[in-house]
Length: 228
Image 1 (tube, rainbow, N blue to C red):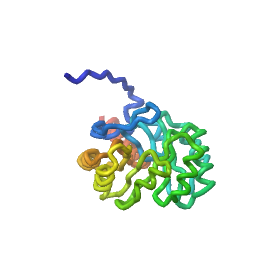
Image 2 (image 1 turned 60 degrees about the vertical axis):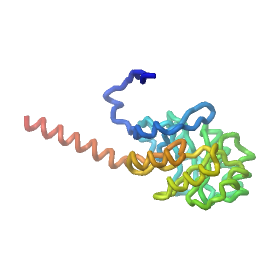
Image 3 (image 1 turned 30 degrees about the vertical axis):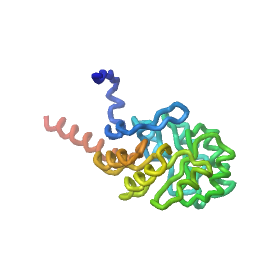
Image 4 (image 1 turned 60 degrees about the horizontal axis):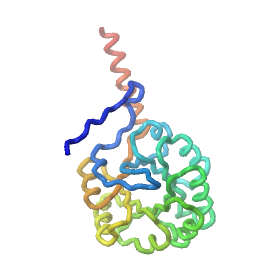
């Protein structure tokens, strides 16, 4: 069947959005409550979250999760939010409360980090109705224990070993949804997809980098104007 023509609407004010690598569209995607997700942008920068074509945002950060951060992101986002709720330093009842708050704010899923105890995952599973997404950073992680505790989706982040970890998981668990970091270029992203990832996380340039690029264009345009 020939590929259908897809009409596209874009304005000058919006053409500078952070676009996901097109190769990510080759991933099968994951449906969460009928929302199909292929690309997941990894950022907590609200300006970037408001200006991207990603299907969802994974909002995790290297600090203790805080309700005000979660609220700001979910209020600003036009796309589904997968909210980080800790699990390492933030465990037990605090993680449960963060999960409940995330659901109340409209998050599509909650993300627990790699050190999260199984007992904490079980406790979270008892209080929320949105998917628990467990971060996996090592090939020997006990995946079955995570699933038994209530994890619905895996978030593989193994740096250079990501594709290999995904392949090992997929060999044993054919149906479990897997989100994975895609790498720096199309070849690495495609390798991760072919290893079995259903969706890909993409780390965008920083706000500072994007602004520097825009300022360079402004300076160039200004220079040409004065030269003319």
